[in-house]
Length: 107
Image (tube, rainbow, N blue to C red; front, side):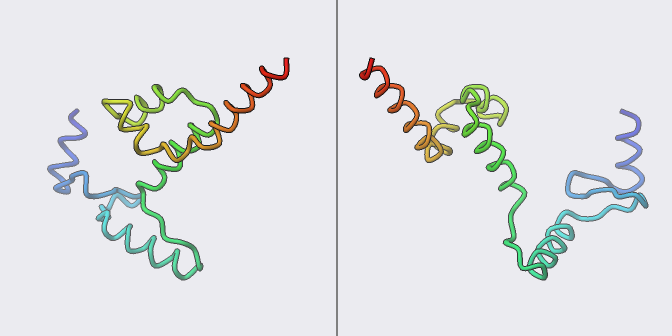
Protein backbone atom coordinates (compact mmCIF):
# COMPACT_ATOMS: atom_id res chain seq x y z
CA UNK A 1 0.00 0.00 0.00
CA UNK A 2 2.81 2.37 0.90
CA UNK A 3 4.55 1.49 -2.38
CA UNK A 4 1.46 2.51 -4.36
CA UNK A 5 1.30 5.83 -2.50
CA UNK A 6 5.04 6.42 -3.04
CA UNK A 7 4.63 5.77 -6.77
CA UNK A 8 1.87 8.35 -7.04
CA UNK A 9 3.82 10.96 -5.09
CA UNK A 10 7.11 10.37 -6.91
CA UNK A 11 5.85 10.26 -10.48
CA UNK A 12 2.28 11.46 -10.29
CA UNK A 13 1.68 7.84 -11.31
CA UNK A 14 -1.73 6.69 -12.51
CA UNK A 15 -3.17 3.91 -14.65
CA UNK A 16 -2.45 5.84 -17.85
CA UNK A 17 1.26 5.10 -17.54
CA UNK A 18 3.52 2.05 -17.54
CA UNK A 19 6.80 1.93 -15.63
CA UNK A 20 9.66 0.19 -17.42
CA UNK A 21 13.05 -1.10 -16.31
CA UNK A 22 14.65 2.31 -15.98
CA UNK A 23 11.71 3.33 -13.73
CA UNK A 24 10.56 6.08 -16.06
CA UNK A 25 6.85 6.19 -16.84
CA UNK A 26 5.69 5.73 -20.43
CA UNK A 27 2.24 6.99 -21.36
CA UNK A 28 -0.06 4.33 -22.79
CA UNK A 29 -0.58 6.57 -25.83
CA UNK A 30 3.17 6.32 -26.51
CA UNK A 31 3.00 2.52 -26.32
CA UNK A 32 0.04 2.58 -28.72
CA UNK A 33 1.96 4.74 -31.21
CA UNK A 34 5.07 2.54 -31.00
CA UNK A 35 3.03 -0.63 -31.47
CA UNK A 36 1.19 0.86 -34.45
CA UNK A 37 4.40 2.08 -36.09
CA UNK A 38 6.25 -1.22 -35.58
CA UNK A 39 3.33 -3.34 -36.77
CA UNK A 40 2.97 -1.21 -39.89
CA UNK A 41 6.71 -1.41 -40.63
CA UNK A 42 6.57 -5.19 -40.22
CA UNK A 43 3.55 -5.43 -42.53
CA UNK A 44 1.35 -6.75 -39.73
CA UNK A 45 -2.25 -5.92 -38.95
CA UNK A 46 -2.48 -3.45 -36.08
CA UNK A 47 -4.57 -4.94 -33.30
CA UNK A 48 -5.94 -3.32 -30.19
CA UNK A 49 -5.31 -4.57 -26.67
CA UNK A 50 -9.04 -5.36 -26.50
CA UNK A 51 -8.56 -7.73 -29.45
CA UNK A 52 -6.43 -9.94 -27.18
CA UNK A 53 -9.39 -10.19 -24.80
CA UNK A 54 -11.67 -11.13 -27.69
CA UNK A 55 -9.17 -13.75 -28.89
CA UNK A 56 -8.92 -15.21 -25.40
CA UNK A 57 -12.70 -15.52 -25.13
CA UNK A 58 -12.85 -17.02 -28.63
CA UNK A 59 -10.22 -19.63 -27.84
CA UNK A 60 -11.93 -20.55 -24.58
CA UNK A 61 -15.34 -20.95 -26.20
CA UNK A 62 -14.04 -22.81 -29.26
CA UNK A 63 -12.17 -25.23 -27.04
CA UNK A 64 -15.22 -26.15 -25.03
CA UNK A 65 -14.96 -23.91 -21.98
CA UNK A 66 -18.19 -23.44 -20.07
CA UNK A 67 -19.73 -20.18 -21.32
CA UNK A 68 -20.96 -19.27 -17.84
CA UNK A 69 -17.39 -19.50 -16.56
CA UNK A 70 -16.04 -17.58 -19.55
CA UNK A 71 -18.56 -14.82 -18.78
CA UNK A 72 -17.38 -14.71 -15.18
CA UNK A 73 -13.72 -14.70 -16.29
CA UNK A 74 -14.41 -11.74 -18.59
CA UNK A 75 -16.18 -9.88 -15.81
CA UNK A 76 -19.56 -9.91 -17.52
CA UNK A 77 -22.34 -9.55 -14.96
CA UNK A 78 -24.83 -11.30 -17.24
CA UNK A 79 -24.17 -14.33 -19.42
CA UNK A 80 -26.29 -12.69 -22.13
CA UNK A 81 -23.50 -10.16 -22.65
CA UNK A 82 -21.07 -12.97 -23.43
CA UNK A 83 -23.59 -14.84 -25.57
CA UNK A 84 -24.49 -11.72 -27.57
CA UNK A 85 -20.86 -10.70 -28.07
CA UNK A 86 -19.51 -14.13 -28.97
CA UNK A 87 -22.55 -15.91 -30.44
CA UNK A 88 -20.90 -16.09 -33.87
CA UNK A 89 -18.42 -18.49 -32.31
CA UNK A 90 -21.03 -21.10 -31.61
CA UNK A 91 -21.55 -22.07 -35.26
CA UNK A 92 -18.94 -24.85 -35.11
CA UNK A 93 -20.33 -25.99 -31.78
CA UNK A 94 -23.75 -26.23 -33.39
CA UNK A 95 -22.30 -28.59 -36.01
CA UNK A 96 -21.08 -30.89 -33.24
CA UNK A 97 -24.54 -30.88 -31.63
CA UNK A 98 -26.11 -31.86 -34.94
CA UNK A 99 -23.53 -34.65 -35.30
CA UNK A 100 -24.47 -36.02 -31.88
CA UNK A 101 -28.16 -35.99 -32.79
CA UNK A 102 -27.39 -37.68 -36.13
CA UNK A 103 -25.39 -40.39 -34.39
CA UNK A 104 -28.27 -41.03 -31.98
CA UNK A 105 -30.64 -41.53 -34.91
CA UNK A 106 -28.27 -44.11 -36.43
CA UNK A 107 -28.42 -46.25 -33.27
